[in-house]
Image (cartoon, rainbow, N blue to C red; front, side, top):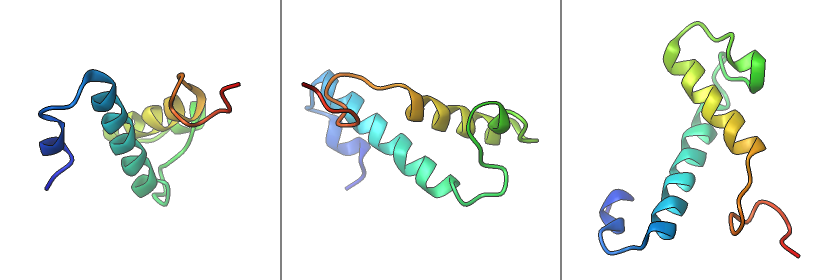
Length: 74
């Protein structure tokens, strides 16, 4: 079953977690590409698709939200 098929009955927060997990999967596959980079370095990639993936990676690396499991919530 695909990730997207599993969201039919899920609430919005579950859906957003799914999207974030999928984005992390994309970044995990892209990290070994020669064009991959964060921040300004990533925006130097030659192709628009590569720059978009790099922007996504930079966002996921820098932005954290309550309940995302990335930072200690005390």
